[in-house]
Every structure is written in structure tokens, then in C-alpha cells.
Length: 244
Image (cartoon, rainbow, N blue to C red; front, side):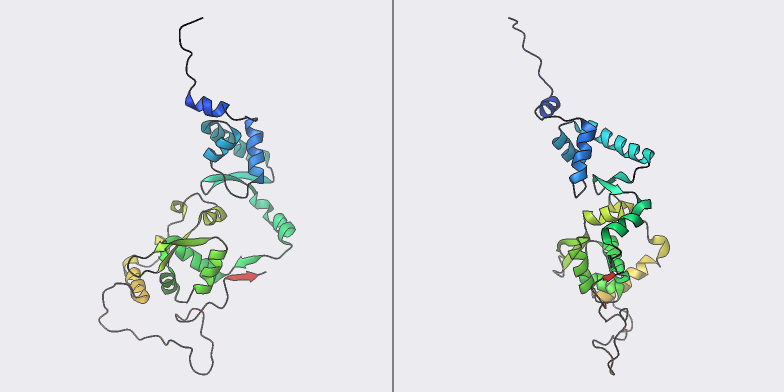
């Protein structure tokens, strides 16, 4: 009987061998097929019982293989995880089958509000309303219920609730982080002037103007005329969705 101690097994191997291991690629496909959210490589590795490095390589290989074969689906890395999607060129067929021609889409007003939140987050409703020039309470409720926006604490000065976009928002537009949003600078006026104007409208700290600007009326004009949704004191005409 030898007195020499047996060599220790590396920690990674211990964790791997303690799990019932299935063949890697089919196991990944099976798990991803039933998942309703993106799964990151660490979670997938713990489920299939393979090292993270092998799981990551297998995911990239599967994605490339599906693309090369021209399958009707693809494997994408979005919002920090991996998930199956139908290929964009078959979107019309999928929409016709699943939605039967009916789809509640976000209105232009909702898309504009979502864009403001995406680029200004964390941001309050009052701030969004000031930027858009219209009350956005109804639209914000729609974005919250759709899971595209979520609460992000409170403003230290005003105590107002702040909002930000969610990982589901990243998933829906097909990016992994907010850093991938396109730059807006080429399409905007001078940002210093814009910030001063928005701060003034929102009632935030800003230099007082030399002459007081005319105050917008708080109520609709006489005669029963309905205010324009973009009048600066009206309300969005709907909750942010439309059926087509």
C-alpha cells in the first residue's frame, strides 16, 4: 500500500463530475427551447453540468451553425443571456400565425416616451412630460405594464419616483447594453441650450430668465375645443397602444 497521497481533483472538475452530465449541445438546445427568458452562460453551465468555457464555446458554435444552415430560427446573445428567436425574414409568417393579424402595438406617443426614458434614465415622469411637452402618465403606465420600464428609486431633491428601461427592453430591441444605443448628438440642437430649456420647463434648478415667459393655461380653452396632445398642457389621447 503506497504512502503517497492521491492527487487532488481540481475544484472545477469536482463541480462538473458531481452533476449528471448530458451531451453538451443537445442539452443546451433542450433547455433554451423551453426557456421564456434569456439564460446566461453561468446558469446554463450549472444546469447542464459542463464548464462555463465549454458552454460559451458551444453556444457560439450553435449560433454559427444555425446561421450557416439557414434555419427558420437563430440563437442570439441579448440582455446578457442566450435565447432562441425566429429569423427576421420570417417575421410576417410568424405574426400571421401567432397573432392572426391582430397586434396591440405601441403608439408613436409611447415610442417617443420610451425613447426619452432610454436616453435620460433614471428619469421622473415630470421630466419626461417636460421633454415631450405633454402629460405622459397614461403612457408610462402602459410601458410599466408591458415590462419595458421599471421604477429606479426616488430623486434625492424632489422625492419623485425615477424610471429606467428593463432588460426586457434590451431584449426586444436586440442589444445587450444601453451603450449600444445610437448616438443622438448629430440629430439634436446644442445640448447646453436644450438642457437649460428643459430644466426650466420641468421646474428644476436653472438660471432665471431675464424676462418671464408667458404661462401656459392650466385648462382647455373656452368653447370646448380639445387641446392638442402636443400643446404642452394636454394629456395623451390613449394609453399608448393601438390595435391594427
